[in-house]
Length: 173
Image (cartoon, rainbow, N blue to C red; front, side, top):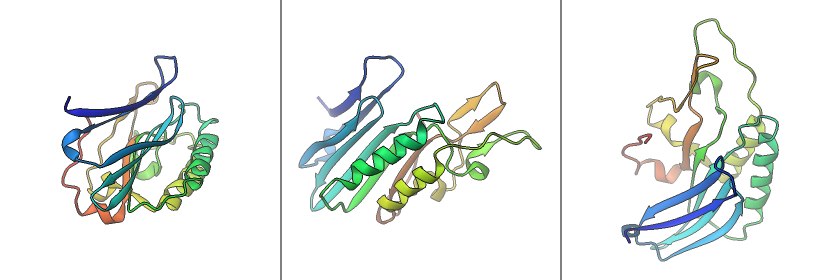
């Protein structure tokens, strides 16, 4: 009763994207622009005079599939014939954007290269969005690999620069 829910799943217990927002947000409309089953959901909101694009992602954990995922997503976004005042993107990206900033590993230990970073950066550059958590200087890690003894920040939120000053707090739940 208090929340609006949009989701896209495939018939597996391992993938799916859900967006839940409070009805008190008082948006005039919510439209699904596109989805990549189990991986991405793009919603268009209208709040007052602002058009908002909201992207919820669950990127492939398979490093070889990640570049194609981000490239496909960028193509779908470029096909949207609509101007947005604000862009929000969040989810499990299954990779770090900046290994030096987003990963903590034992001293002297090097990690494997990240796959998909150029394609991912092309996406965030096209959307003109920035890493919210990085700008709030709260370097928290959302994933721990027991096998490699490494903490990583693979779950992130990005937004338009004009929204950064309105963000008060971010918390992993």
